[in-house]
Length: 210
Image (cartoon, rainbow, N blue to C red; front, side, top):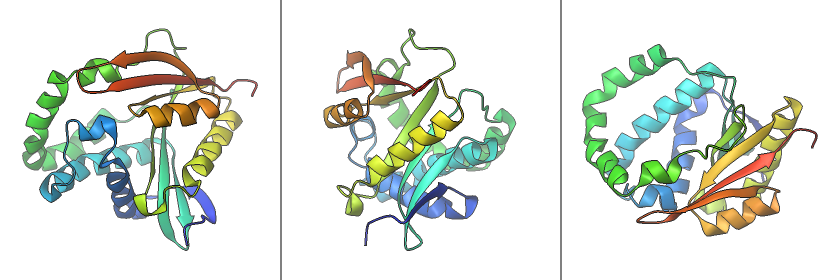
């Protein structure tokens, strides 16, 4: 088990499983762990509502989320944000308002993130091509990390972006080991920032004519 047999576009009926993989993978990730303790089940459930809303908005708008499947189980996923795809603000409000009382418990954590310099750390560099696409997240369940699932998801995303003539793809990571991995895939370090709690690495891969 753990060697994927297919990568496919995610569907709405996979949301719960996608969420579990995402939260498990990002529990100890630098840009999450510094402001959000996902070891707390209550906090994990509340943050999960926000992530699920984002999944729904992306799927409805047409931003691709690819999932890696093994024996019908999702082992990993990769989320892309395309420059020409816009999410509906009306739909976002329709999803957020019914959950607002529970989501308000995240407010102190967002304030903490701001005080720790997260806004500056995650700000997109100004010198990128205007119409770039974004690799928002890549997540592999901890039980299946180290099996090249992330590599296969990244290759799949690159093939997809090449097929749609993407000019380039931007990403941000807070992990030095991830920076090194992305460099092996051809990403160039555009900017490195040192915040109060961690470093952020802003990277870019030119896709045109690849």
